Length: 397
Image (cartoon, rainbow, N blue to C red; front, side, top):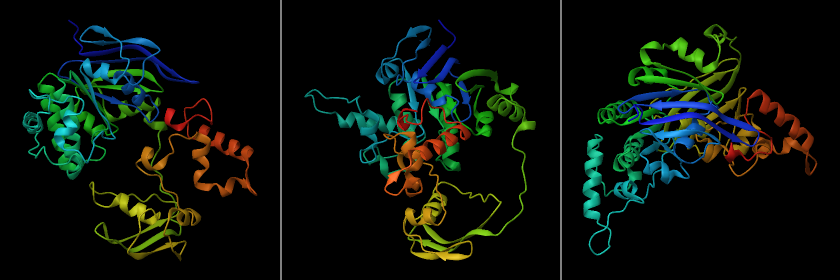
């Protein structure tokens, strides 16, 4: 019997022109929480997709409890006992908690009808075991992100998962919800379930994990017991250079006010929000989930209508009722929901890069393809976008 519940050996995954994983390694013991950390583009998402059967590795082996496995699809991975709670939750908000938990695992009664009495009872029991006293007959969308995340974990518990991957699980949670998630992870660990905890938040890794694995540029770098890591060594392993070469805090010269907001109002969301952003400085917005940070930015960008307040650019009052007017005023918006709101996944990198400024790439009625190629290539290089071509479909990256 292997000491590992799941083990990945020398896994390589190649996409056209890009080696996303290069001889990747990963091992998780029963009842262990393994932290997984790496920069954006390090290969974490591809690694998760290999473990969950979304991608088949070109080389390497996957073992579950010492037995070599081949996953052709996510159903194969789930049948082997591997589950994943993705950062973007896979919840059908209009369906009940019970329906979400039992999707594709329906219980039927003697007459072949769905046995909802039994499913509701089981759903309530599983949610209670995760610290959630909820009515399983209610739509999942009526609950907050913390409960919805527990619904995803309940799905994993229901299939008797041997290992659960948690992909940036605290990114949309408030403080109390994070505490509940941490408790749930420890409870799952006590049941002998292995957990891969993917996070950029170092304090979470040190609080929760037994070991931490670092990956970089699709390659395995190091795994150590948590006591053998510290902030400096983790970051150095993650970026490939010492902290001396990282971004030192710089105090720029405070320039003129670039953007000023006064008494912004949006019914039920924003109330009397005012701030000033100066040239040469970075203004941070802090607050719990639901505090209105995203809503403030969307309102300034014209994505959501304001009921009151004023916006000034370089001291001049501007009217912004839609994103087009915001872009014309010199405002850009990088949404947290990259897939849903920020990108057109079915289009190429080339087309996505020019969408916000089509007129700027036109010569008369036609697009200047040479300029698009030049600017696009510069962006790919400067932002280190891993792609074989500017014409690669974004959803395939």
